[in-house]
Image 1 (cartoon, rainbow, N blue to C red):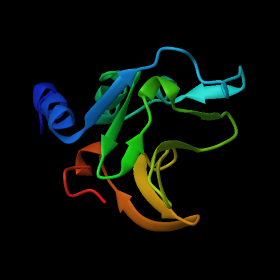
Image 2 (cartoon, helix red, strand yellow; image 1 turned 90 degrees about the vertical axis):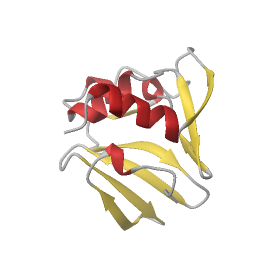
Image 3 (cartoon, one colour; image 1 turned 90 degrees about the horizontal axis):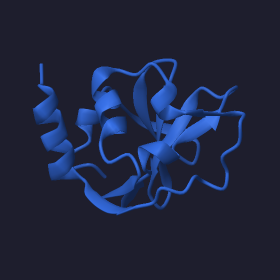
Image 4 (tube, rainbow, N blue to C red; image 1 turned 60 degrees about the horizontal axis):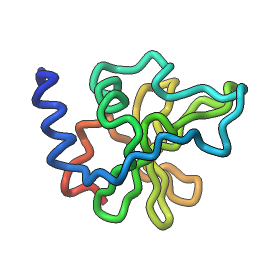
Length: 120
């Protein structure tokens, strides 16, 4: 099992951080559920605690700052990142990440650590 230090090092190596934006999203309202408020696997908790107000860039993907990721309470997934025609969502039901293209499942990732330099 990877240690916390190794997991955080992985994030540092893989993602390019953008400037912090501490202002709340204009889309936020009291009916929203924050990603960080969910019961998450340990590595996903670490991802949410790492540079919480900074977007991340990787191979044309924009990963939203963890403190800016939310969903409506009646939804079961969060939009974690997007690319031109792809979405990366975190599904609360199966605790996995799913790459979606035009609303169709393209790939399932078991862990946030599956995102690396080869991620497209």
